[in-house]
Image (spheres, rainbow, N blue to C red):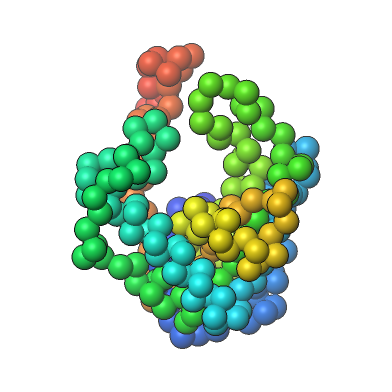
Amino acid sequence: MELEDVMRTTGAVRAFTDDPVPDDVLFRILDNARFAPSGGNQQGWHVTVVRDPELRRTLAEHSAATWHRYLGEAHAGYRSFNPIDRAPDDIAIADDLPKNPMLEHLEDVPVVLVVSVDLKVLAVLDRDLDRFSVVGGGSIYPFCHNVLLAARNEGRGGVLTTFLVASEAEVGPLLGLPPDHGLVAMICLGTPEHQATKLKRNPVESFTTIDRIDGPAFTVEA
């Protein structure tokens, strides 16, 4: 595929066919994804390929609990898990919220990857600012997105979720996570039941300005 086509059609895929992803294809996906940038080229990511059905069910249960909380906060009018406008811890959450179909059948997903990072190699330049830290993600999430791009290039698809991260204390020991490492994401891959050919995204002019955030929009003549 052409790079532009890959970038414009790599949407979140949560429903997969029963087709397996051969190990050589998965290896090729990771082999291409590893060329992602990272601060100081430290490449602090680690990928755990989760195949044990019982472990998958445990990961699904923890992810589903966070998914339930995510929906509950949204239904209460909050931006779920927002660090600025945080929902109260004791917010009432209904029991009948929709379940996540992919998590309900995680043991059937062709490929489940858990991505973690060695915190010792991160350069977190905003660690001392009086706000929520975001810089560290720049050394790990480009790799995660490269996994999705590489999967799309192989005719597969996938989705990155972070629900599992909220249960790091519980699932970390099950995965052998060292104390100085952190969970980053769970990535599910497979052959899409439906492959998106067009994604809906905001236009460049809506998020790009000149000189200041409140400056004029950057645009070109059509």
